[in-house]
Image (cartoon, rainbow, N blue to C red):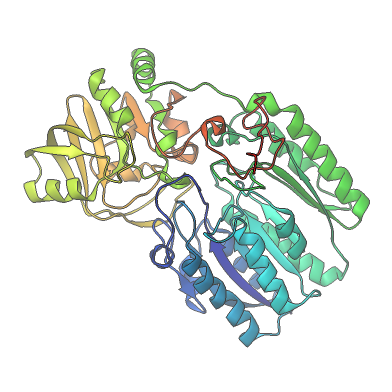
Length: 502
């Protein structure tokens, strides 16, 4: 039996987004559990689709003594403040120092955290952990599929395992895989060799989906490379909305020999490189997407789903832009819904007015992003909710939502699910809570990029992606990079980034 410390610190940083992640945002957690310490951690994450939950279950079943330290996550946003990073990392490092010694450490990290004072949050976190536990203690880590994996992350850890699904329906499974590999390494007492490859192009977030090609085939190939002397292979397509040196795709391979790790990494990297142009997809402007959705809905038996990807709060958007909503109203869309729209003041006004009332509102655009205007109209209050419900879909399944006052507002043939807290529209219960049945709609707009597919793709006739104004720019070629390393193509087949002259 080994004594294993477990901790988690997750944030996906959109450096172009307007709002930063403060310590309080980690304390509250948003759509995730609040900051957890010590013995409260295992019970609170048990049964959830989280890497930490999967890791603890596997380690305990293997007979190890699990010592929980800290787990926290905040919704994607701009930089993590230095204050938040220092306070949370001090908890992790402090408890490692005071409660040791340990035989191993498992960390549940994201891989795309950028902090106010430095670009590589995970690399710095791992450096600090390594300084405490020393060079001989195994440090195993799980990563998000969107990790902007850096050389420093590889250097200061012994092994890293990334999700293989987007939508991320395998988060708990990935934590379990990392824990099983840690258990194996402890028992076999053999050194693990590693190989790391970076790819020279950025992949738009929307086209990283593993339900569609080329992601589906690439991840099937990734799994097929494992076996024999190859312990595990991961492909992280990266989080492109990050103005950092190491933004972009990477491949990780680990084995019992350096030769095995290198060969697996090279084969996977070559497969990704050959698929570069398959990562480009069709984008619509707001009016065109509503017109196309209306045309398709006429002969459809299921809803036509529109992904409002540039306002995805799961990637740094604020869930309050109105470009798609205005186009729905302007084009007289019928039997149509949009959500979740973050507007606490409008939700409060709807509750004050009551169900059945008609109220004049300036809806949306509450975050002050330049060029985003609210939609002013007379809205009917159709249904009210307290924002407390349990999700049932594959991504958020089992999560107990606390989204504050919610309301279904309607204008013409369009209904809007309004919330008081930001949360990616990735579960059908978010709409049912305010009286909207997703399966009965003709058109459904979702403020999400890909995670919605886990619960909504099975009920969708087809899925269209709109490039409506918002802070989560879908095409990296439209982002004002300044720190990206030179020579990286800023979208598939696109021009190479040139670093500005000093």
